[in-house]
Amino acid sequence: MGMGAAPDAIMAAGLGEALSQAGINIASQHRIEIEWEGEDPLGPILQINRAVAEAVSQAAAIGLLPVILGGDCMLALGIIAGLAAARPGQKLGVAWFDAHGDFNTPEISETGFLPGMPLACLTGHGLQDLRKNLDIETLDENHVILLGVRDLDPQEKELLEATPISYLSPADVEKEHTQVVAEHHFRNVAGLYLHLDVDVLDPSAMPGTDYRTPKGLSPETMHAAIQSVKAVQPIVAIALTGLNPEVERTQSVDTAIQLLTTAVHD
Image (cartoon, rainbow, N blue to C red; front, side, top):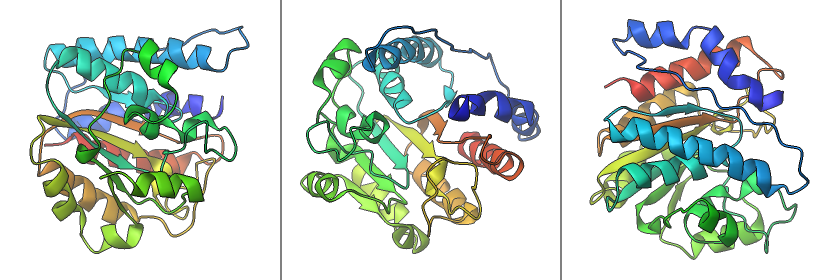
C-alpha cells in the first residue's frame, strides 16, 4: 500500500478527534479507491483525479473546506480541477510545501517520474493531454510559491527560474520570508490551495516518507509558515501527501495530524 495507506492511518490515529478538540467539525468523509488493470500509466491518474475533482467541487460549491489525504502529489491535479469547477473565474493562489520542485516535464525529467511533474503540469508545462483530459485551467504562475524546496534537478531548476514563481529554501522559511513572499504573490487572489507534502519536513521530524531529504523544515517552522500564508488569504482547499506509514508510523502520523490541525484551524 505504501503512501496509499496514509489516509486510513491518519484517520485511525485520531484526526477527527484532534479537529474536534480544536473546534472543527468534519461535515462528511469521502473515500476514493479505484481498480485499474490497464497498462497506460496515465489511466489510474486520470481516474483518481476525476474522482477527486468531483468530490472537491461538490464540497467547495457548498462552502465546505476540502481536506484531501492522499498518496503522491499528482492528486493536486484533481483538486485544482475541482476548485475551478466550483469557483469559475476566481483567481487561485497556490502555496506548495515540498522538498522537491515537482516542476519536471516528460521532456526534461531525468527519470520520467510522473509525481515529479504536477506543479509544472498545473502551470502549463508538459503533460498537456493529461491537463486537457482533466479540464484543468492553467494556473497563473504569478500566484504560485514553493516553500521548503531543496532538491531540484538541473533542468527543472532552469525551467522554474524562467517563471515568476518564487521558491524558498528551508533557510528562507526559517528567516520568516514566507509572509513577504505570500503577500506579493497572493495579493489579488480569491483564495489559496495549501499543498503539504510531508517530505518538506526534516527526516528527524518526519521519518515516514519514501523521499527523505536532509536539512528540511522543523514542525515549528512549518506551522509558523502555514500561519503566515493563511494570514494573507483564506484557504479554500488543503492536501497532505507523501506520508508512508509503512516506513514509520507513530511519529510521522502524529506530526501529520498536528500539521493538518494547524492548517484547518482558523
